[in-house]
Length: 276
Length: 316
Image 1 (cartoon, each protein chain N blue to C red):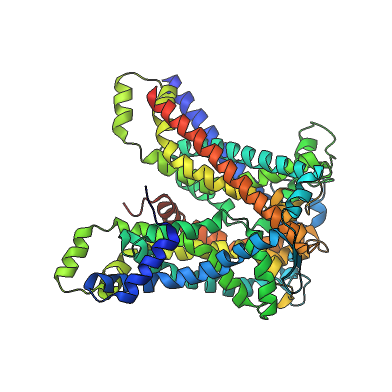
Image 2 (image 1 turned 30 degrees about the horizontal axis):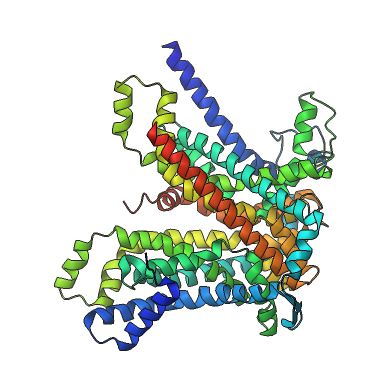
């Protein structure tokens, strides 16, 4: 009896420890953004705050602030939504075409495309940078969208292919007997099956685009198309810690909310539980 | 096995598409049409430029026009490998990647085993564990920088408040500590992904195995050692490979936390510096290909190790 209770106790202690490891760093930014700087830049920080102030948020959201948080957030939204939508448009049909050997050798082609995850990013960035500058595509949202799309496509094909292949082949045969042609087979039978996966893939692509740092670092110089991930960095040098943290919280808020909201869905799709 | 390879397959497809008139080839044509945009976008953005850089790595390149001044053979490679500082970066990259993989997987296993049990508040922890994934690396940089801040960071405050010391240690000024802080930040960032996959592996193990083990009176530890661990291996292999390649290409965290200060640079960072700070494309391309070879070697080592491990685990 005591042994059982003790085991339960150590179990909960471990759970709390995990919670602290993961959540504490996030809590520190949140705390910093809600306190005056002189209460943070001291060794007597009270980890449980005695007051809350939104001053830093009001300051960074003012137009003309050194970190253009509002504009950068809008840019991030446009680029991330654009990339996520384009990935879906490209990857979903491709997944269907490659699944079940519809296109002979489709599986092998997918492996070849996935090589982009092993190749060092700089290898393609170097020529692409020069090509994009030459074509005048530098400093455009389009450049970011197309680059993100190319990088996300192979992974999203993997995810979507699992959905196609989880559909029993009898369904396909029955549809064919009912007079479905191959185009209808895709649009009427498989697209509905893939819908939960499409939602998750969109979310995944959106989040990864949102947090991307290296690509905008290389491909954007102009402030007006800054994304939040990069904008923050550009601001880190001249700005107080409280304001920086407030900007950081604003930068992570949309994706954190999405993640919390769709946590179970993400878990299911990522682990393949959804397709079973 | 005679496999025509990707190009051969593509060519065969193309021929079928061109010649196609039967029902099956109509289907193939449709499938090819569906796959084509993905091929064009990924191939155009990545595969073509990668081939271009192979040539660069053997050349003296003019950055502004991307034109090759002259072919120099292995000169770029030879010069890089002759530098002691470059070799130090290679060893550091390997250390960096292997430690990150080992620690992340161990932590992920621990967390996944916890999450695999039913308890009050599991939902909260399940959601929390996903969060680092959604934190932009720059924000991660801000928060780790804040925790390890020299005068009044959170770590120093904790040390001071618990009376463990004066709490004014300049953590990031020491490059060895700074390197490990970067590794910690990377581990924290990878944790959600790896945990999810390990959890999936654990949940795929049929309950009947544990029931049988319980009937035989096997201890929890033995159950973990003989059932959970070996049977999660098939999932662990792809995850370690993916994570290894991720760790080898860490960039953002280093950039934000130390700005790539000497002693905290890994090979991927060096490639960036050669290309986009010094604009010397030849050496940058050569360094990138050395990185690629290093990655392939590291992945092979892992695959071989784990093969042996899986066999050993099941044979017992």
